[in-house]
Image 1: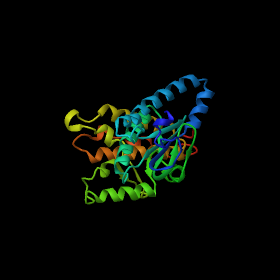
Image 2: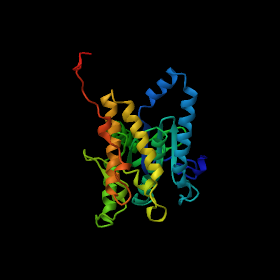
Image 3: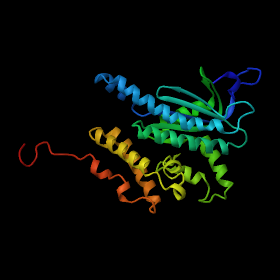
Image 4: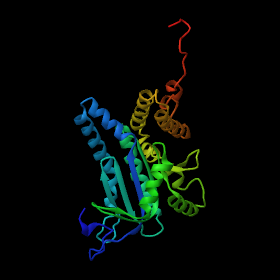
Amino acid sequence: MTESRNPYHRDDGQRVVRRSVVAIMDILGFAEMAKQAQKHDQEDEFLTRLYAALEQGRKWLELDKALPKFGEKDFYVLKAFTDNIVIGWPVRDDAESELGSAFSALAWFQLEMVNAGFFVRGAISVGNIYVDDIAVFGGALIEAHEGEAILAKDPRIILTASAAEATQLHLGYYGGGAHAPQNRDLFRDADGQLFLNYLDDTVLIAPDEAGPGYDMLDSHKQRVTERLTEHRSNPAIWNKYAWVARYHNYFCDLWPQYFDKNHKIDVRAFEMMPSQIVDATGR
């Protein structure tokens, strides 16, 4: 991105913070995956797979280039460093359109990454930030980073307090009813955190015209199943992928006209079970 197109640069070149929608994401378990690739002499293969996933996922983030700009400025700025991504969407009014754009773009990014085998965790905030190719700075970055590191926990993109407050305001525009777009963009988790319902804006983008994206949902099921199988002996990690499986199944349950038990993940088949030290046969 050239400085002249960066919305965090004034026309005179001065760098400024702007009130923005901010998203920060990283890849769950990235360091361990990289270590395993090194251990098994598969670094080239891992790099190829990672690069392809990030490249494909980033295409969805960059669709916002076609949206209205700040004059000749871009609609958002993205800074990526391997498994860490920060995006800022400068706010023009009350942040509803920017949050809506973020929800849609991040949903596609998250599903593309998961279906390539990379599970994403992150957070969205609303506040002041500055972003360019060299530096990221501002209170919204700190809030989003703390949300990702402390609150997200599972492979989900959560809303921090500032983003949740803005969303509550926007729900009021629709009378707080279930028809509000935010009611499909987001779910509320058992711990009270709002998180991105990334399957809705992707798998069900146009079900009446083209039908659900069954291939995408089946790929999602397969990737989650692989992780549940891989980490059965590690409860702390296994539980994170069990969370994704429960989300997957809840999404399917909401749309019985499209999905049945064959689309769901049988989490019980992958549950960790205790065993006797010596079994009944004496072995």
